[in-house]
Amino acid sequence: MKTLTGYMAGVNLGGWISQYRGNLARNPEGHFDAFVTQKDIEQIASWGMDHVRVPLDYSLIQYDERTGRYDEKGFRYLDRCLQWCKKAGLNLIIDLHQAPGFSFDTPDQNTLFDDAGQQERFINLWRYIASRYKGEGQNVMFELLNEIVEKTSERWNALASRTIQAIRQIDRAHWIVIGGIDYNSVWRLKEMPAFDDDKIVYNFHMYVPMQLTHQHASWTALKDYPVDFVYPSPMQPYKDYVEQEERSEAHPRYDDDLYARLDVMDKQFVHAFLRPAREFIEARDVPLYCGEYGVIDVADAQSRANWTRDVAEFCLQNGIGRAMWSYRGMGFTMVDREGKAIDGELVRAAAKH
Image (cartoon, rainbow, N blue to C red):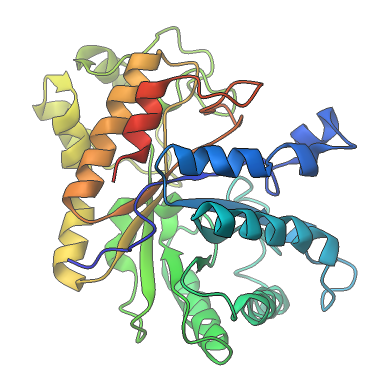
């Protein structure tokens, strides 16, 4: 079992230099300087975590009207965070959260996989990032793209292979993180190729059961569902939602059999749902990483801590690194407005490694 030393328990810095437009509107003068500070990085280290995953939107570092030019002002925030992490003893993952022609939350508008020019721009962006950070040690990893929303794997696998080859022409030392389709589903890992590269980390995200992790989320079908889900719990409230849920080919379910055969929503369900991760490790003998997992902050505190602990336990048992979603805001916050942890039990569960 191959593990990722230094990337076993971390947290995402979502909403800072990715998905930042709402936060920027609320604080147009100071968002980028205030949302994440050196004090925050020091606090994350004090929790016992070993890394941060930094979602990054291409629009902050590359000009749309001049696709071969890069914005040093945008890179300045990432560079500064990297220096803070070095001082605090944390590692850092550069996660390209949105790319030219692609965003996980606009699948009907994406053009990346249809447009050869956009693909070349994507590859060149990674060439530039690799050149910029190739002098760093193993304190940095490169994550090619967040939550692929293709219906099949072929086009993404092909682009990922080309991008890996381009990076390796510049930098053969750094780990490259890559996830599969259907929002980095653990159930689609098996469709990813065995890349001819011994420094590839495969990646999945974990938000199941969605009834718990996204309850009342304004961007989901659970927005107006009149039930507060808890964990652990009798299965019936979860089954009731599944039975009336509108299904979608674009977002298939993989857990129907678990609802049918289990009477309780608890660790047994979570670990059973994640079994493809264990099977993937056993079949491939490669490092595996859970780049996002978390429970929305409107859920009760004990349920958040309980579910987090159970996901963390599975990851630890199988040598899987992980990063909690998310440090501040984004509906999944771990800290209050003053930057203090809102629940010590949640922090301890997320930081255990």
